Length: 438
Image (tube, rainbow, N blue to C red):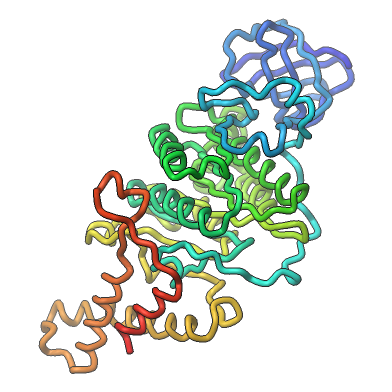
């Protein structure tokens, strides 16, 4: 293949000129230097110029350097050997352990991280199966259903990552499924805590982790989720397994894509986001599907900038979800954990076909009581609770008991707080609610 020449260096953007035999978009190129610096073709310009992204952020690349084509996209090895380890976007180990032996890598199949979504989805032949989280408020208001997408939405510091850790701990143990975690642009400390929690609970042996945290450049942060999904697709399609995929944080994925868009001089769209924001989200979310081989059940956290739920990125991600769990700063301020805003959280999976008649009817009754509670709070602030009718006072007290009932201690916080964690089956939760409202 023809060689290219580095012509322009601008931060993480490197423009490579080819006389002929142009590379393809998303193809991997390698600089002919000692480091074999990897470049990812982002776009083609003026017929002979490849606009590339410096994935590793290698500052040793010089103008005039020769660049070789690879003939393939960014590929990662996939297989059982990836489980129990922590990888970066290019499947290089970042857990302090050595890379897999070369003979093992050579035998492992390789998959492009830019594969299109599996087209022949087949949900109709697979019955909906509820995965119990052991968390009362989630199992009741936003049931965790195999093969569906659930989002945890909230601002900074309201407990998104802790709730994710608890769900990994509870659901992975209960389902016996393989878990894949993608850490996208979050704090390095949280990654260490998650790794330690999984290790302490003997869950690393069934978990593969991909991290592109805050310290990484935006190119790596924008690719890390795609690498994690690629491994999940391998286990679903080739191994015919059911996969639990956890992504923390989806907003940081959009943020990283926006940073990359800025450095390649794209004109921003609505809200200052990249013009490709819609396709960026769809290309990723459409790969999180169930087919005849197996399922990918996805739990995604979504950071809300400045607690603004109307943010375009938050809205676009929310449209892809089957259930949304909204964490509220106001609820957290009351000392309730998890800080779920019951009134804003919603699920399209709360149907009699999925959760059963009993659960559905209880949910309808509880929602009515909580809505009445919200309307009565304003009245009580003016005239006092003693002036309410006996029926209103009874419903108001039931609502207060329900709100307190849905608060619980987490297993993953037990070592930190010294308070034993709680785990409740869905049957236990329904029984407890019936005792309060009947």
